[in-house]
Length: 563
Image 1: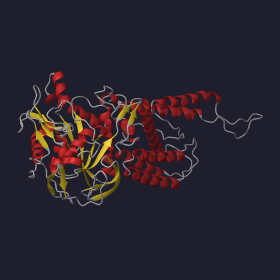
Image 2: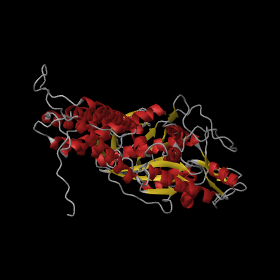
Image 3: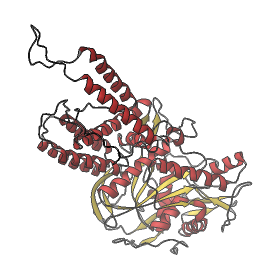
Image 4: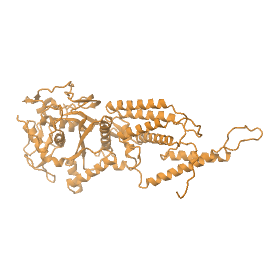
């Protein structure tokens, strides 16, 4: 067996400690090689990588348990993700997966200082794309480019950080052909009389089935000429009205799985730190990716960590949100009712690998959390600006609570990116802060502690920004163009209410009549309806997302005109 030269155009990256172990020839249909020196190996054949231990634990689908995240190069994580098949608008199920992994990447880079090199494939040639292009009577290229642009705009609207590169399948056809040629040369694929190329699953023995038990799995439907029902297409012979490219086996197009193995290898070489995707991609897609890369690179372990996100379900349904099931909501439709911040909070409240139910109730919970955070930041600012008078604050207790929260959040995020636990710690800090922010209606000259609240506010803003939630400009993507004017109107309304309320609270003259209690402050009875109206307005505004905490009336200096 001869080894293959690098695929034309592949970037050969040198990584510290990355030494490929020698292989021995194929024997009895099983790949043999001298085992790499690794600290440990799991029962499923996973070997702990050599390199830098980040101190982070992550659930690895290869071992079905949490593992220490070890990177080949200190401070650098290579990350490949399966992108969309661009034949229609992306829906909320797609958004859930992409936002969740965006959160994970933000945590790695902004909490743990790791440079994440992320590449995503755009599948722009596929059975669904061809079928849709024929229905629409436009070329597959025009169709795919149109929906690729829609996808990119959807991701920007959801505040998903773009990968270092989006890479299209059709821009890499020569590399895919060369990759398949190498697999054939290494004895792990075969051709058919009609020009198809299939991967020979039996040729890699127990190396197939690293993610799932494939003993009783069926093969891809509608395919003939295969030696084994589990074999899958690397190259599909051309059919009438389908896009096709030249190859040594005749005109045709790539199979689904080969694109990811080729493109990931073209960027990251023979070993990858992290591979991600929805749980529905674990089999057959990711399983077949692993098989192809093992056969091409002649290695026992190509991707070190496979991370899978859970499905998004409509409340009351056990089925995932899917275009084929016609039970989906597009991202554009969703963003007409909610903001990107609200959806991200929705994702933060569950673990990334758990299934998640989408419903009005679950979205209301996310919106309520954001409203609580927003109200707290507003009140802290009012306190720091001396517009809110409070009882004396237990400053030491707040400093301790802040330090404890910072440690708890970091611990939670290092434990398989446990965002629900991190959010619990953040909300607990806000609860402690609100307990101290008890407004009073009369200034008594008590000592103030604005610095500790400033520190808490800065931390909450920073950690939420790390997670992708912008507290400074929450409604930007959801508000109308004249939102600045609307905000000023609300501010004036709140100011007017405050003036009315302070007028109503002005004490009445002391009652000096017989039987009156001297020295007792009382209100004007005829002003009670004004107080009732102020309370009603506060309740009404709260339902619209405007939360008011009554503050002390302060004497303002008169405005000087003409200066």
